[in-house]
Picture 1 (spheres, protein in one colour):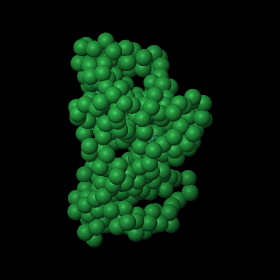
Picture 2: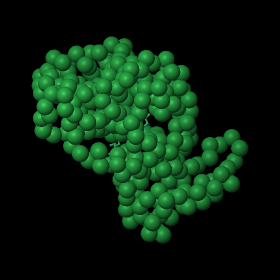
Picture 3: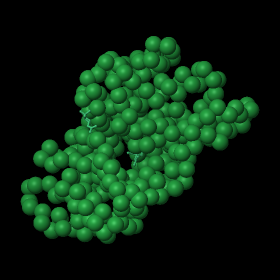
Length: 288
Ligand SMILES: *[C@@H]1O[C@H](CO)[C@@H](O)[C@H](O)[C@H]1NC(C)=O
Ligand SMILES: *[C@@H]1O[C@H](CO)[C@@H](O)[C@H](O)[C@H]1NC(C)=O
């Protein structure tokens, strides 16, 4: 569960969607990068649905796949319910795809005209839907399951924490992580979960996100700041320690449902958030 977004990935993320027109058959040198959790907000997609029937149909499609009026929750809140990861994940997926379809309809640009697609965390599912590797309804069901499994994977007796540290590198943090995790493992008591901290993401060459149980993350952050391995920390507002070892049971829970999905070859390259290389359908169940 230790993922690395390479520098290449960072550069692709930075390249913005802009409207330089490609001639037919020509690929644009533009990447489409979809957001992950944290971007949900009450009212999301309402303007799109009101103005564009294609967006409304997209939200209806997701509601039907989930058998749940998710779009009502997106448009009207409440925020704490929308923020629950089992709701936030399909909501962000639905919003991303609705926006993409509106762009396609309004500009006539086809998915295969973009250079490549990628996404942060669950945004990789949006990228797979955008390139038609997976249907929207199948992806909506999977990310709902994913959200439920992720929320259930962390023990209620601990508090989660995720922190971005900067400027720093995984290599500089590794010795601190190892020593903190060893300390907790050594003092672990039977029957209670062992505190731990992992590297969740490498956001940029100089920004690393840590994830784990609160006490362990705090110990790593303190040590990193004290020894000047990093200068600054920024807390993320999360409900579970995403992309840490705590999420392993969630990965197990998704293995079977992912195996049942009918994948197609993506119409444009999808860049993996783990390897920063192209992902192919045959590798998807393992890579996700
Ligand atoms: C974090 O998210 C929760 C749930 O949506 C919200 O109630 C809270 O105000 C947020 N906290 C911060 C510091 O943004
Ligand atoms: C990478 O994408 C997969 C979906 O394809 C997702 O399950 C995983 O959490 C993502 N990892 C990161 C670090 O964004």
